[in-house]
Image (cartoon, rainbow, N blue to C red; front, side, top):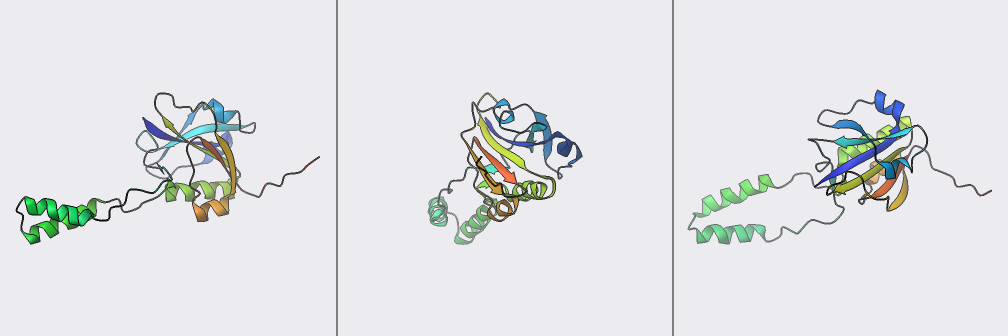
Length: 175
């Protein structure tokens, strides 16, 4: 039960692309995504440690930690700890909190994807939480964004939504 980040890109680009240390790019067949991609595109999982859980966070606010210090002080006071020991424990607890909070894709992944799209062309991004199957049943919605805008905003991608990170703005023409 993990998140998997799938990138759709031309196969030639994936072969030439080297991922930063700590990340792995592996070819996969995500059929619901492949059906949305142009000819010559292939799907790849971008992972770290076997999944993408560290690369994606649901775009929802985290629970508020206000009052945490007071709760810890009360807890440790009941245990008859000294004031100096309580303060040290609270300072240590602060160091255990996540330092970089993000929603959607992790900021370095946003930069990586947007820079690839700016340099080499359009990329598709899909995040899926898998229970058993690595592939979602279907793509819920398709969204487009310019690579430069994506880099600045870090668009809060939702699960099972296909995000096209475009090199150039797409102009719809009516015949």
